[in-house]
Length: 120
Image 1 (cartoon, one colour):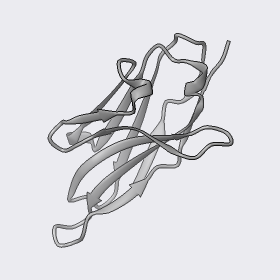
Image 2 (tube, one colour; image 1 turned 90 degrees about the vertical axis):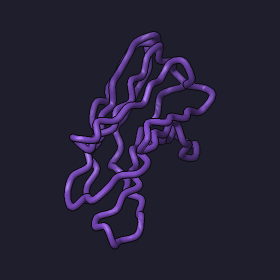
Image 3 (cartoon, one colour; image 1 turned 30 degrees about the vertical axis):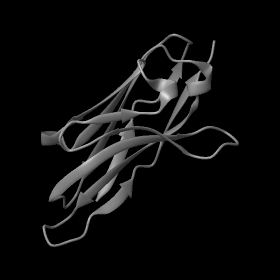
């Protein structure tokens, strides 16, 4: 199983970006999908999560600005980021809690990260 993240880049404060993360390989079922980020010199922090039923959760600092969504047919999770701020600058990582086969246990997989830089 591989998770491929994309969509990062350089954007001015107040701008928008849309991150995508596609899971590929042997996948039976995906439970939760999420995004984390790691800024220079800081620990990785959780940003947003979407469950299989569609329930979403966000860290307080991005509520009202970021929206997480998923396309189950494409095994893909998205993060729409609006009104970006310099403090959003980080490498963004996606993760997925999934089963490769029905009899396998749930396992967490991570994408490779995509850089988001918010600067004027």
